[in-house]
Length: 430
Image 1: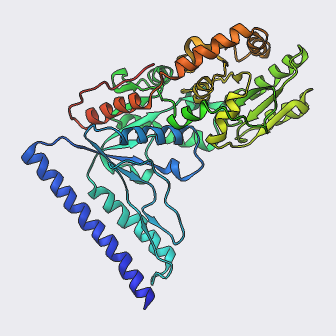
Image 2 (image 1 turned 180 degrees about the horizontal axis):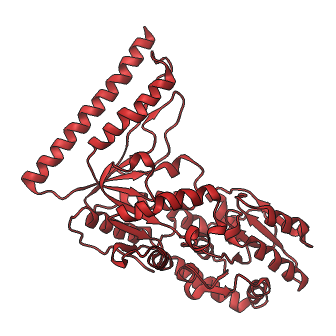
Image 3 (image 1 turned 30 degrees about the vertical axis):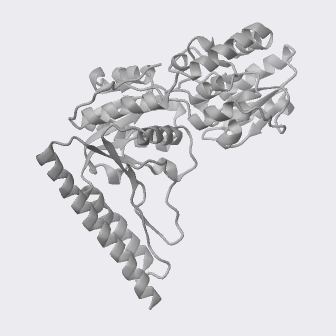
């Protein structure tokens, strides 16, 4: 009997969702015809929230959080997995009365076989519900929409974070490279509007894919407000070395970790007594990096920290003497912004998007030269006045990166993509 009741309750919830979605769709159409309302409904892929969040996940989290605080005539349907298996948890979502996440959890004592039932619900029922949502825009914050979401909105808006796969394909994992090469051009062609997180990425879109510049909107990222608050926390992390230089990112070829390791060995040779903290998970194609690490003459002074929660990350930045971030290519370079917010000067590459973020607060080096990277770091270690000046410039610059401004521009992109009026700008550059 319990199984019959819980199964009936589950099917009843799904039925009410179907009828409620249909009723809302009819009411919105009526309001548009009779009253001329110009509300825009945006469907959003939130699959990045279902895994350990890195750059793209945090970008989307902070953007949606800021959009949820605004009143731009938008409402959002958040899409991940609608039908959950028993015990499966939905992804976390940022708050906001305009954010709607649809989930239905199959009960433990569901009367029908679980695997075929989930297949039926996810591949047949879920698309019908999502199509009934009637999204004006489907937003893909990670280059392209998941295959199952492609037709959940009339117009497509995508965010492009970088074009490493086109500019430097040798630094991109083969499976990612294959997926992007096969699907990304189609998303570009279909997209009504394209958001680029930097002018560097916008330029790469024009150069490598011949995209009309008028379709591209440069919208810089903002500083995570929660992280900004942590950046001023005076409580020290006593587990960290007393004196260290810092590298932060996934450990992979694009990040030029070998250059950082060689530069640190030179700094140690020149008399720097501290350590190097490498904070990030091991990525792909790390054989050369691991060999360089193990062969380093100062291996005993290199500390590797795996994935670090953001509540601790601010301390890791704040207690470092400088951030070494001489990446080969970045679409934005969030560690630069976070480091500056914490008062830690940045040594970074004078190419790609990195100068857009660091501005006058960065020490710029040639990523191809370990000696140049070491010299840039030494200029901070040996000149206290220079170090203090860049600390102040960095904090001041970091405060200018606002998620509210980024959200306002993104809302403008959504409204224009849907053919609606937009009162504010649809680009945001610091």
